[in-house]
Length: 280
Image (cartoon, rainbow, N blue to C red; front, side, top):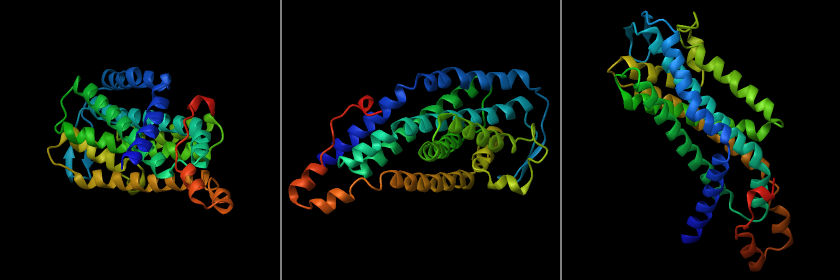
């Protein structure tokens, strides 16, 4: 058990160090989130924006700037989390492969990435919720934070997928921005006349959009839509696992066929003590 904890802790530490070195992402968290939310509040008129909230069936008329702030918060957390996970995956895939070739268990590598994604998503979601509360008080603060957290998880998994299958950073950045713009703006009645279309239900952050809007302007909880967002996260995570398996699929077979003895197995089970920067 201690060995497994050591392997997991080592992999998690490398992942978190990789995120901490992404100074541009840190700057985005500190500056972009409050800037985007603040601009949405002061630049959008506060006149009522009538809408029918599908998650509760209620007819609401929230202030336009507050409604846009929720959309802005969703866009900010999804873009930042997706970017962080894409960058970590894109720059670290050679390191992951070499660890797997050296016998580092892939299960520990995957759980370490899941841990870094969860911590990053939680921090970004709580921070965005706190910034929103500086301007007005949502009806359900905890549900708003939970909705943002679920959206961040989903886009973090999407970032891992894009980092695994794309070959240039600019491709990943463009893909994340385009997906986020279409996904976050179409459900907003302030920006799109088709916000009530049935097509909107199939967008990745539809569940988050409904749950976050309900959290802001209704006292009715909407756990079903939070669960819907987790379904998207589960699907994206499974696809991310497949891409990770594909990337490391040739790590062990030759070693297994050539040896098979206890000494080889013992050596393969030991993690390599190599610093990430030496492998990029």
